[in-house]
Image (cartoon, one colour):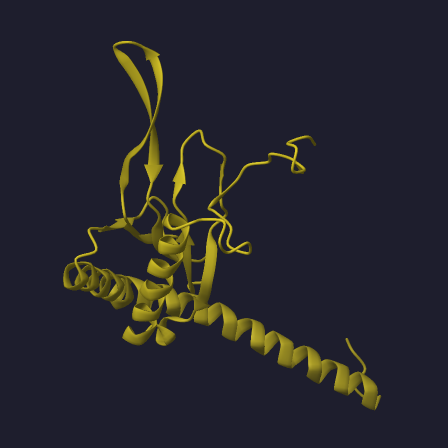
Length: 189
């Protein structure tokens, strides 16, 4: 048993009790956030995204990925297409490089919060895909329609910048990393 006669020990125990209380509150929040996701948030996100897709004629699909309970994701995808680049195997066969056009993801986290990510476009077998960009992590009550519009605007801006890559803006990085080394003007490393 802890001796509570010493004032410092009493303060230490009170600090511990506050931390335990905070821990219990976080655990309760996780359960609550998961319930909100299942009861309403999942459908709200899908409905708002589908509305923006239709209203802006984006040409994207919205799907629920539910492989894992309490780790579901809603994916707005711009789809996959032939990149327009190919390798000629012989006179009759061309191996096309596939381009993934990017996606906006609302992923349920282990603690019931929602992480919003942008997956950048990439072309298979042409460099390395750029890592996803985290827009933010939200509690269910923070997920309001203005946030969805901002997320979609950021997604479209980032995807447009990826598509419009050129060397006019040196700080602008294309969505994959290809290492050509440090070449000087003569082309030598």
